[in-house]
Amino acid sequence: MMMLEKIYDKYDFDQDYEVYKYGQQVLIFNSIVNIFMFILGLCLHEGLMTLVWMLSFSGLRVNLGGYHCNSPIKCFITSNIVYLISILTYQHLSNYFLVFLFILFVLLLVMSKYFKYLNKKAKLTMCIEVICLLIPKINMIIVLTLIENIISYLMTAKEKVNS
View 1 (cartoon, rainbow, N blue to C red):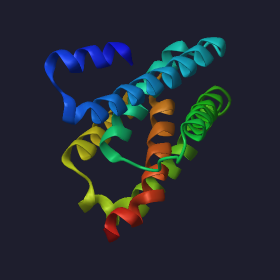
View 2: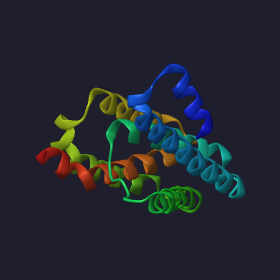
View 3: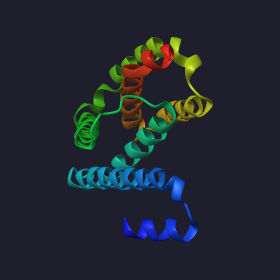
């Protein structure tokens, strides 16, 4: 915090101090969550798939939005549980790729009425991730992240549509 205060004093960001302070806290918190996930992935011998999952999940989540926890502790726990379920599913149920592809297809059908509310970046990111399904080794983890992101989006889509 002191370093942040020095920067703001030097460049006279008085009115935006709280916004930048909040942004710094979010950045630090998200870094901690991602570092913990990556360490967990290394412990599960899935470092590469952890990186693929992080890029897929974060890339789509930033553009799509979705459910947000009301406290940092809940966010930390929920994020790691979602990640852990995804990696364990990838490790133990990768033979059932077609089943998960079917689930993804059903979720996309359910979500179709909300497509008009998605921004262009979210649509583009989803298209890129669907194309990534053609890459054999990572396709299962991509399907899982798409499913998780769509469920997260659907949990809050009604609120977005009504506002």
